[in-house]
Length: 84
Image (cartoon, rainbow, N blue to C red; front, side, top):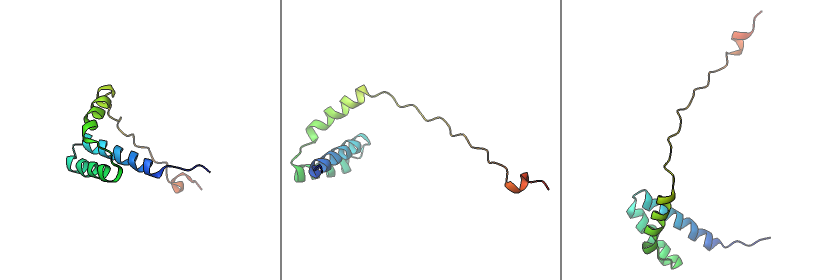
């Protein structure tokens, strides 16, 4: 049975949540998450967050919009297809 470092998983999840909040412009939420990272894990994110964002933004390809959804044509009702 393998053991898993749960604290490292929490740290990774908080870091992802912090980066997403910053990228979405939710600065208050990002500040709150940064405070949790500092107090619980001793991890400082404010100085390294801008470097991480610019590195991912410069290499990321622009997103393409999704194609429109096609509507499926319903099958005829069973009673309409039965002939006596």
